[in-house]
Length: 102
Image 1 (cartoon, rainbow, N blue to C red):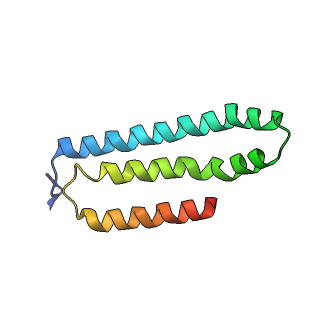
Image 2: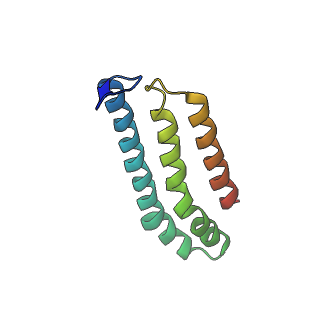
């Protein structure tokens, strides 16, 4: 595929596949964020302990980011890019997010 004289090592179909995967995982992350906000938070408020409140408050924002970066990692596979570099970057970001949750 060539755009403005720049040649890319993937076809338009591969690019659209990767874009569809990213969009699907963004929607999935938003769905899980909605579930956490509307169902789990209401459930946690009803319990006697505060442990579940703290846990839900801690995982609420980063959980959608984990899903988004996993989608990005999976979306890179159809493209013929240097997957090892992208994989290491995404793994590092995921590790940082999981460490933040812990």
